[in-house]
Length: 292
Image 1 (spheres, helix red, strand yellow):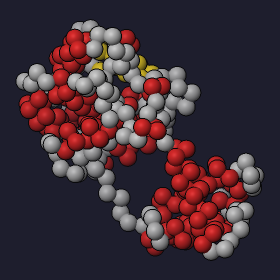
Image 2 (image 1 turned 120 degrees about the vertical axis):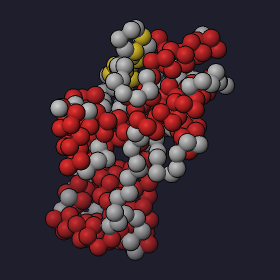
Image 3 (image 1 turned 120 degrees about the horizontal axis):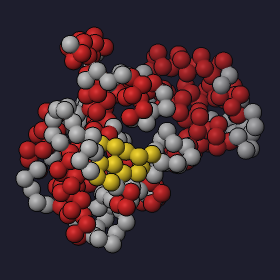
Image 4 (image 1 turned 90 degrees about the vertical axis):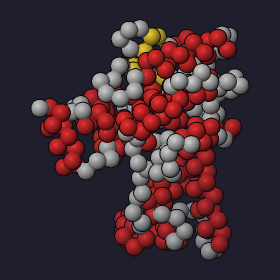
């Protein structure tokens, strides 16, 4: 997906050069003009990512391209465009325990395999701070890879927890993978019985298939499939990312130390703090009340 985005950025740059009869060879002036041009069509926050993609794609042909994209003139132009054309970031609402309870009450009594799959993925994603892409396949077949698929034989379950091996994630550039562990919650729907019921249904229907997450038709669930089911319960202010944001907010409110939240969510930096969707003063009050 990163390569696809980088190719799109390069195509935009080449089209810009062709449209304005500018040389393709990057320079401070060309990059500065490109920043202004693109900021009138897309969010300036995205233009900075475009510059990174262009530098990566053109570096084999123009070794000085990174110096051009990082030049003071280009940085100042980008800063000015951010001030002039940026719009507020609209973040999706984080899932709450009450939201989970709504879905749990609706689907837990069901014997449908797909209902059990969706509920097991939703509860597991919330409790284990999983990205939606770590539970489902991309909608674009060109981006689907078995290297990112969780396998059934890596699953273990006992009275204390259940776990499975996540082959790769964004903070794991060498694809060593990591074990995802889900513990019984102190509050809210318990994913244990749902995961056990899903696992039993999956093993009954597909005993020879290697994938952990499978739909009733034997296919790996896709992002479109998951989001369509999510939309049947919530409005557009909830997305697949709401699971991860909701889980981080829940742990922060419960008083879990920041370094443990970062480790649990497999964040390589303090970026997890952007996932906590409560005002810092409110979060401080919640943590203080939980501690007392």
